Image 1 (cartoon, helix red, strand yellow):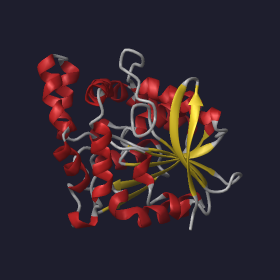
Image 2: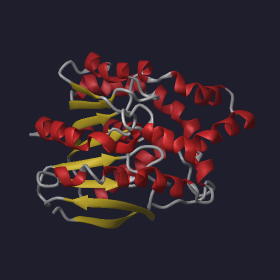
Image 3: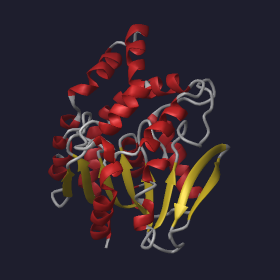
Image 4: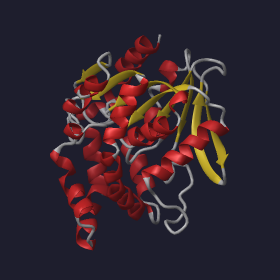
Length: 283
């Protein structure tokens, strides 16, 4: 059995909750989750890798067990989330590491790589996009909000925060929905129900356009620094298309791109296969 500990780090007054496993001194692996999840999404992956890596999986600001300050006290942008995560790695002594990025974890982690390229030894992207061709038509309601930030366009996105929408994210594109544990989406829905959480997520929907604007910078980083790169992709993802995974090869010709017959939350059904791919990639 692999021991997983549950800790908190004081990041300049911001309380970051994180899961930790593996031996100190082993190669470091940072896991960054996505929307609307938390480090809990890595519960099946961590035990499969902790014999080889020192693993840390923080909850992003406003997610999971990390601090959820009021929007008047903390601006919920991807730039600010990346700053907190960058300082977090310093506080816990993660000076050089591979990182696994998923969904929101991708623009957060790639910002960290832009700011501190010397820290990032390798990148594993699981449905973490950096190319416009990877964005599906499912983004159209959010695009409308980017183009015109009216209250009506903002309110139209509230349906994406409902319990039914979270369940759909977990089960869409999965050949057998019975293979998906309800624990993940139930916990996400609990966190989403906290006071103020919906408006925080709507702020992040609005700010996601800043990630798309940074795609050329992310791609320039790939070309300049040539990080080792593995894409492990749920090919039936309704938000991030397989074309986005293939596009990494344009800037990183040696990138290893692997597809799995599942949806957005690929670890819910393919944790074993993805862990094997990571082990081979980082061996």
